Image (tube, rainbow, N blue to C red; front, side, top):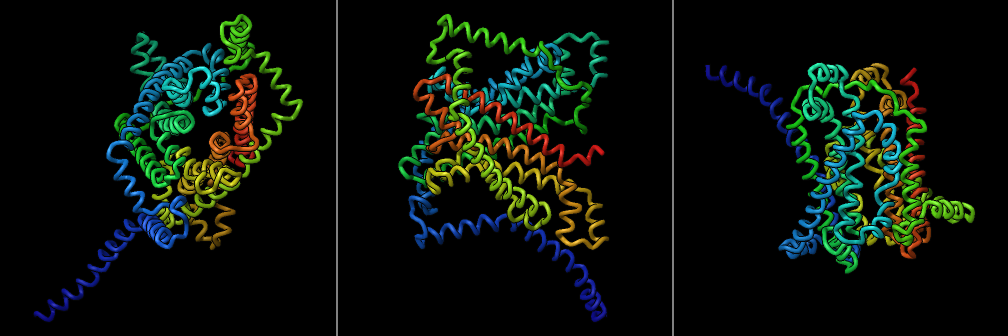
Length: 532
């Protein structure tokens, strides 16, 4: 009897334990994989510092970074961070509030869409960085400059996404509101706001990222306080340990902002389905009415300059800007500067976009690769783009190499994320078809994966193109250059040549719009099979 029981227990124990043991091992391995890359990097860092592969002025030892964390973390670091967070709070408050009101007005008024929206979109094509020289002359380099830059960065995504959410609200809900004769405030609170909430929150999510990045940019350029200023100070004193510490803090703040907003979004969007919506309107009508506001603004601008309402050293007349623009085009100075900037954009796009596409393919096709590299890449993505400037200039100098790396970094993540998500959204039936047809890896990529993920990949390429252009303007701002459109703007600002500054701003806006249009055309052409 005991032998039978023992045998029975032995016979049962083996089959029952092995699946659970395998599951436990698999669970432990899956939890350990995300730590493989950070541990390897940390070990390589320790070995490189102990073997003196690089100077401590280029790669400080981990112990030195920890010492800086203890020293500056006692108060100075948190004081600068608190100043930056206060600026971010007030900028977000003003920008989100203004964007909500403006987007709601544009979404509810057909006349506003016709008269105001084209001008707003045209001004939004000019990157926030390109406005900074003009804002400096208008508002100085004090706190007002930081607030204005933040509001400019935040108001654009919030306005455009709120506009879409309000404009495309379900028409039947509007009919019900009209039948119930809801007053305007109830119409906004009970109908428009819930219907537009998903789109509005998407705009706020983008505003958090662009606001934090723009704040760091303006602190790097013109500030005596804040986490961006602390990075510049550390870079000037060759204290890369402090720079690395600031990068870690900036990444942590970005991650906390993202995490906190995700929690808030889940609480606010508590209904099981997305808000009802119907894109029932066509494109915004374009006619002579859309030219009324630009004509009025130009007339006011010309009058204020001609009548001496504003100093011409601060705000030159539009006629002077046009003359300077044509003169710069005629003598070749503007085309030459623009060509050099575009070369940097395309080089960075090829480097960063190509790496992002390859990394997205690897992460999308291999679960193990995603577990090993995905969390580390997500952590790096939380570091605001301009936070890397002091470190890149220390590692790569101030030449073309540093600029190309910075532009490539700007173009890397949009294409990485889009490619990975495009592959993840593919139908599982494609995998079954590949196994049935016994396709190899190259055939799967060429025939199934790339065509299926093409819409997402080209959408990511369009974003990468825009971010590469923004990165080029930033690289020319923060890294001294022999040429480039942003370098031309900086030189003109120092000489108080506002006609040259504004002429360059016009060209930057036009090129940004053309790059966006080019990306849309490439996306439509490459994925035209979807409309067949």
